[in-house]
Amino acid sequence: MSTYLIINILIIIVPLILSFDKNLRYYKKLPHLIFSILIVSTAYIIWDIFATKRGDWAFNPDHLVGIYFFGLPLEEILFFITVPYSCVFIYETVKFYTKEKRFQLDKKLFLIGAIALILFAAIFNYQHYTFTVSIFTGLFFLFAVYLNLDLLNSFHYWLTMLISFIPFLVVNYFLTSIPVVTYNDSAFFGKRFITIPLEDFLYSFSMISLWILFYELSNKRKR
Image (cartoon, rainbow, N blue to C red; front, side, top):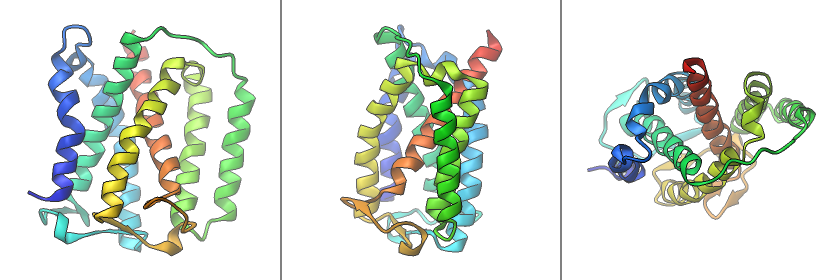
């Protein structure tokens, strides 16, 4: 079994087992999760295909099963299923076991943040990873402000993001230190936290946030 496949299994195994917990009943939320995955994961997979072809990053064949789709290894495709499954599970767990608190954050702060990220992307457009991840993060703030501002004022959301960064650090450390994934230094700043490119923090923030955003939008649509 490939190293990357084992990592995918470890990511999803606990949330999968606990999906039928009588309190959470996470399995009943799967239609909303699938809606989110179809939108967000598809967008990131398309980016992934072009970035891989361009050489922004590459996958070590020694740690893969050797099955590819559009130039991406099977394990990479699975990553965009196992991670949202687990992250939204964390979100639902946080919602069940903690009391919601509402912040009163001015939406102008997020709009300024979005504009700053887009300008940042324009300035560093020659660094493909830096450029794209800044755009995606800026787009998240714009989408959230105009589609679900309550999410940005939610204690549950921010606590979920804080908790999610713990497994993010563990998983990314193994992916980049083994390495399963290698990065082209010209595609980003070249600065790393241990072995993790700094841009990965924006990558994870934007991706997890967008999964939660579209998951909640699907929930609201049902209600």
